Image (cartoon, rainbow, N blue to C red; front, side, top):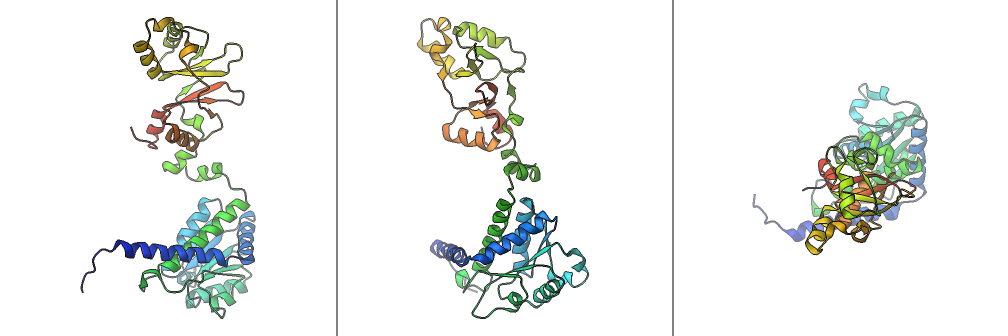
Length: 335
């Protein structure tokens, strides 16, 4: 067999073909999609399970769609159509919904399974390639969705455009259903406590090491630099790399003074310690609300490269200060 040279343009063309396949699916969406989403959300509200089935590559795509549904608060399992006919039919209950995947719509094992479940009163959502005439799977479906894919990208026998389009349509069903049942970031975080996804959705105050009233001194903004530093030195344990300045009367944040600010002051002033802290602090620093999540902090850090971020409550009073080291500890940024 003669090896072909690596062709970047060929790869680009293939990806563009797959992109067009997904765009084509978007153009085919109609009221059937809405009905499918309603079946899925109704199943979730009734404590049912969305069972996804397909054979071969369709089965692998179905497993991913099922995993996405489950991660978004919609109970789901992937079921092999052949195994279903050998004992796994007991997994299907009256309140469940089935998503059946087959590009041709003629996969015998899947058509037989769908026909049995349809007779038992379970709604079946099929995803097929579609065609001029309804396929066998479409005929036994409650809702028949199509991807309308012609030749596979790359002119290869292996599924490419069809599996990509099916996965994209499955994602659209899952996301639309989750949106319909008002699935939130907090709900997602409960299902993803580990890894970077879980970390990104944690409340920012859960990861803040320096908290007001504990190890974060709040300094009166009417003090001199010397007095402010003296007050900050009284804090036990590790101190943050910045001071938060507040209005003595209201307790609201007025500014921030960092170690970098101190170095620049010492190098550029004849009497740095006697300088009023209010004259050299950064007024109105960018802050995060105490209700923010880590994802918000990461976005602010990346946008502004701000190593210390004050966290304030609804009244504008400091609740804590997020240090970039807190994000490094979560492995969300590097040193």
